[in-house]
Image 1 (cartoon, helix red, strand yellow):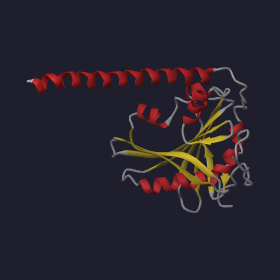
Image 2 (cartoon, rainbow, N blue to C red; image 1 turned 90 degrees about the vertical axis):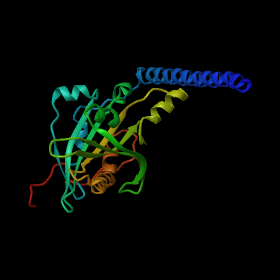
Image 3 (cartoon, rainbow, N blue to C red; image 1 turned 45 degrees about the vertical axis):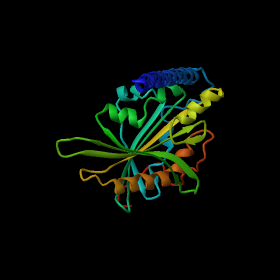
Image 4 (spheres, rainbow, N blue to C red; image 1 turned 180 degrees about the horizontal axis):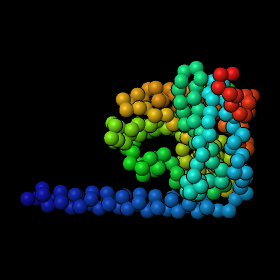
Length: 250
């Protein structure tokens, strides 16, 4: 009995300590969110661009031939972006097909919630993979990014998609929004602009993840420099290919 009476207070103290730590973490995360939201919501010396500025990205990038996919007006408004580009690119040599989505804006607080884990999960997908990594661009510079794999049940079998996602924040590449949060904590000045780049490939009903990842990596490596050239201060090289695709067969 003596042993039980001495352990009980110890257990109570352990539980109390655990609760205190949990509460502290919750409070800290709430404070962190409020600080970051306040920082990202400040008025900034933003660098807006015309709504069609992203169209300067060539439709032909190396072996990749692109086609613009129009976005409905209500979808564009829901992105909270100032400019949006939505295209598909097909590799004329390998037959690989990649989707490209770019959103640019000066209101970082509005853009940051539109992240793959949030948007895909909100549409019924389950996240299977979430890996931050770096890939080499065509100009040999490193590109930090995150690769996601998502699945969703469908009538014809599971739907699967691989997403390579990264950000350009005031000319600096970032694999996720942690750069924004770290700048908020350090109290650095307002954000001039944020651009989000998503490159997607379907893994198909047989969940061919390897081929899907090879596709997004290959396109990201080739298209990275001309995409970077679209944004102020970002590392990038404008592509020399024509801005409109030549007729098929040429």
